Image (cartoon, rainbow, N blue to C red; front, top):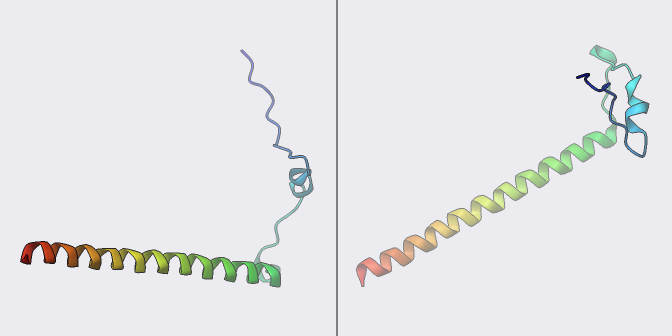
Length: 75
């Protein structure tokens, strides 16, 4: 049984074909575009915000359960 030819995945917008022949720039010539830095900063702030809200919710839930249990034990 023969293995089918492996071809790179191409989407309808032909993104794979555009970057297939692109040589990555490394070293001192490598640059990050300004808008990529802004997108990364917004993403980082979003992740930190979501994690902060989840942590605050978890601590609040723990305090609420503790108060209810303490009230049940004392009563």
